[in-house]
Image (cartoon, rainbow, N blue to C red; front, top):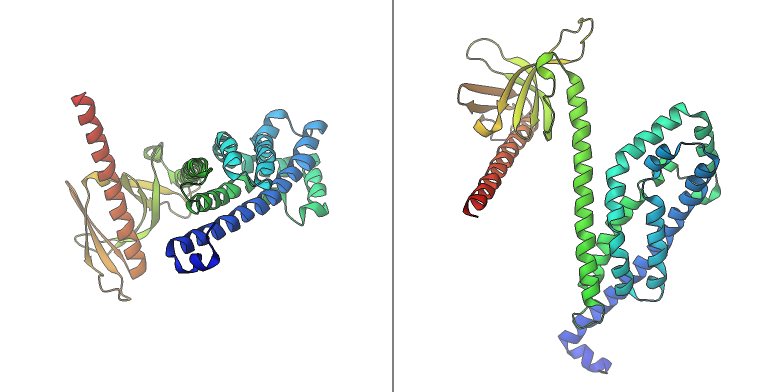
Length: 350
């Protein structure tokens, strides 16, 4: 065992000492936050899930949709905590990793869970009274059920930060180095998967909202299977005449130009009629003016094989954001096309 004097004069030993301090500090934080997390999981399981199941206030399908894999996630935490308390971090996380799929399943159900909660609070008087009564318990410290439901997804992000930090501050010759490194990789992969699920759910919400804004036969199915990027008003500058305001919806593969319905339209007031679809695969984008960042806005030129669009905005920042989003859409399509081409070549070669 090296003396404190030798450690003070040896940079390698100093670095190892810093790693060990960070490792111990991270492990302590993981333990303390896991205790609090498990307590909150248990409160929801005890005072909401199990009582609702026993009383039959919600039908089994509604109960399952509302809480998803909550009980299984709670059980996984109950297994993990004793290992953390004994300092067996590698072994504990190794046993915990097979349960990570529960978090992906929970994320996939999260949107339906919140929708079910709001629907039941609105139409089910017994459920509404029960929730209000339980939320008033001192154990919940003023938190509402809707605040607690995202808890596992928030904890997954904490797991990623803490487990990665724990692995990074563990020396390679440590007995649990391999276990911690593998756990960090699996937790990060799950967190990325959950993030992708969340992005997809947000995109679906945008598509439903945009689809509701579009009316007419041409509008049916326009948003299906697309990624929403941006929407907003721009002025279309014609070869002759005055600029005309149009609403534009930018997706990953097309730019949709729409015209507002008349305000006095009996059935479709507040909606838009699709006037044109421009494929981003054929778009050549340039900024005609508005490079200086001045207050007078600018002009974008979008060239397609059979048409050229001049789009103007009097807001310089708005124009810059549109230029960025359009550039992103063109790059996304080019990247997707390159991947498909590469895959096709690989299959052909095989």
